[in-house]
Amino acid sequence: MTRPATNGREAKVLEAARRLFRDGFLLGATVRALGVESTADSLTYGDELNPLVREAGRASGFGSDVIDAKISDYLARTYGRGNWERDRLPHPWERSGGDQQLDRLYVDDEACLADRQLRLDAMWTKRDEITAYHLTPNAKTEKMAALIKELADLTKQFEEANKRADLARGQRVTRQVFLQERFRRREASRGK
Image (cartoon, rainbow, N blue to C red; front, side, top):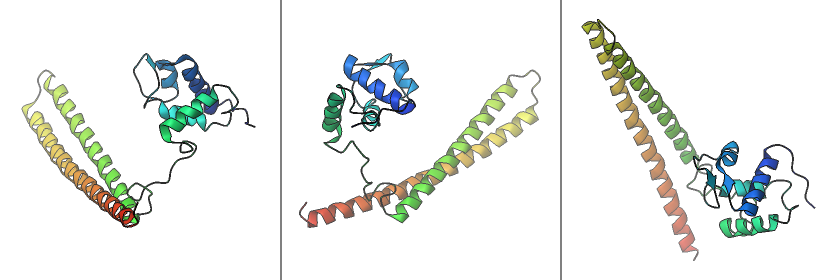
């Protein structure tokens, strides 16, 4: 026997999935309220809504409505029978897959990307400052030259951060490819 859904997000997601399977579509406002990024007026079955339908299938009130059998069949065909009921374990080449070196590389990659974004934002902020100053009457040439020099320094900092981010991503991906290939070779040696 199933428990009734709570009146929080779980109940809203479950009701939305049931409406999707009854009506064949969901209004864009409904899915946006549930956190799905979309500008469409309405959405039907597919990749954008599959995680929402899976979340509904995992809700505590799932199974208490006749339409839930249809949702369960859809989930089984989309994710594989029983695979939608819980998340799979990560593969060795994915984050938290058991390789500590890869997990460290993920952290480094994210830190470099965050630093790159900060440098990019600073560069564009300085660019906007230069544009605004250029439009002021009686703009001083000396100050404009100083602003342009600051922009050049910020641009150089961004380029260096971009190189570091590219290097970090390359190291992470190289490790992932190595782990995936090692996994494939082990499986092949076992006859799988």
